[in-house]
Amino acid sequence: MNSLKHLLALSLALPTISLADVSVKEAWIPEAPPTAQAMGAFMTIENSDAQAVKVIKASAPNFDRVELHESIEENGMHKMIAQPFLTIPAKGSLELKPGGYHIMLIGVQQPSKAGDVIPIELTLDNGQKIMVNTSVYKRKDMMHKMPMMKGKSE
Image 1 (spheres, one colour):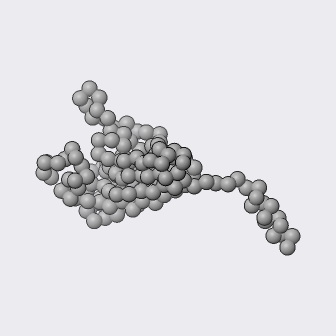
Image 2 (image 1 turned 180 degrees about the vertical axis):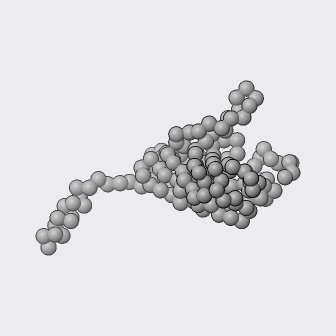
Image 3 (image 1 turned 90 degrees about the vertical axis):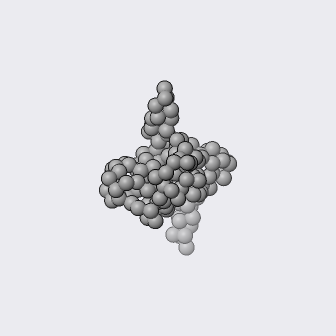
């Protein structure tokens, strides 16, 4: 009985960790040529919590490194800029899409093809981790997701 009291006292003394209510929809990766050394991952991250949440890290097996990026156009040139974090606004969402924010999978160790699923783990600023099973699609099957590619062939 005494140990139960100590356990209860200890549990009350520990800080409460609040987990954000974050979910991911429509996670996808365009199929890349077998010799490609980088791939982009896209998805919509939703946050129904009353506070903004930051994705501070992403990781995936079979890649040398995984980075958070933003694509921008500057002086007519497209650039990808590594981001220290991605913010999902309170009661909002962030769309990771071609030409915008995305996750870069760099140093491909094992080529992926359409139909494969690549697990990507997102780490939030509160320590929460979210596993996202990301489907690989042929480019022609993704035309509706990639407005900049409409009308172009493979």
